[in-house]
Length: 219
Image (cartoon, rainbow, N blue to C red; front, side):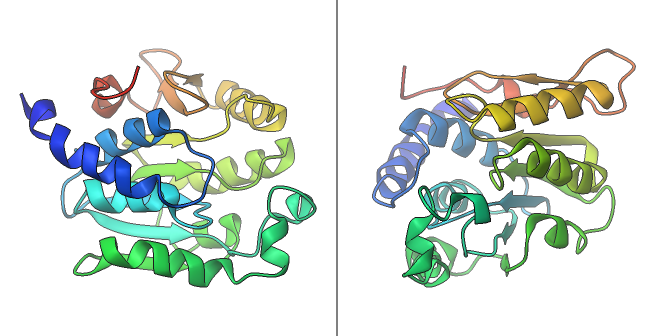
């Protein structure tokens, strides 16, 4: 029943978020929003790689938790000739602020304008309840990001990300390789969203209840 109660705000949030340019599909936004909606007000959610705020707006609309958005808003160096070329001429950070402001007022929101690894250094170990990683897309950058962020996640926390496949071979390889080394296995339910699950019952990190949430709108 508690999932049905979230259906109406989810539909509205999905409509609003799709007005913002970005690469997350409606199904992926829905998956993310449903899980964020289960967080409590005093918990911590961190998004690494926010660009113009498409996914950030979904998170902000679906949860009342404490938010941290980490990005340089300058684009990834190896993507400035294609995916992030707009960062050469436009102020992406100003666009992000404008796009998310309608959903940020009155909420506990912090912007951290640093690289992923630098941003991780601002959090104590075992402090984050929900991490959504959508930063660099090379094998090396994904590995560095996971190495920096994993210690910051509570053992009961949710670690998930974007672009697991869909042509981003470096992301999938990095997530899989790092997981094997740390007793975690990546799972994929919708689109290119990935999330870690414990590889065995003896793994330090536990299976998070948020990953079992049903999808309500999209096929």
